[in-house]
Length: 186
Image (cartoon, rainbow, N blue to C red; front, side, top):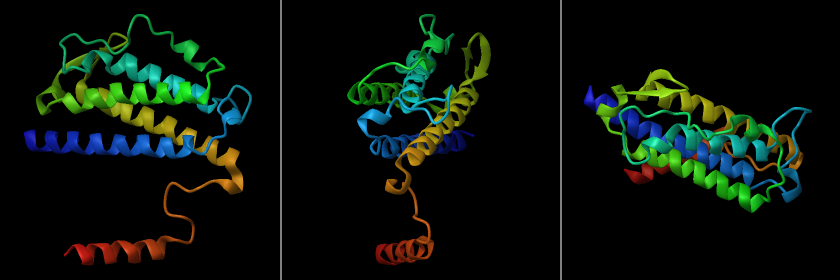
């Protein structure tokens, strides 16, 4: 079981770092005046998504940043979740710093988790979860918001969007390049 847990932790750490990179690829394409534009009324702007992600990451993972702590609560008493969804006036540099800080808390916590920690208990809003369940809950949550961010920026950029994946019509060339890379590595 320990081998599976170690494999899981290795995979989730790498995957979440990849999700962060995707989000950064989208954020890097925003113009300063676009950070606070939602696609629809009552929708989330990039600024709101970044603020919410960072707030959630601090609340859920701040107590585990130094390692598993018995009785850890994943909803800090001082958090004002509703305020995370109120459009502010933060500059792009402030929002990027908030993004980096939130991800640092989450990734630092992931990095110190051990296989044995995955079956231990923590609570989120008083509800008991295994650490594994809490990680999975946040993997889905954070990935969902990052993909919202990607859609938002892609829509705002229109024809100027720079893909974060294989470009349309580029699959065959990508596959050839991957095969050549594998052959060269052998």
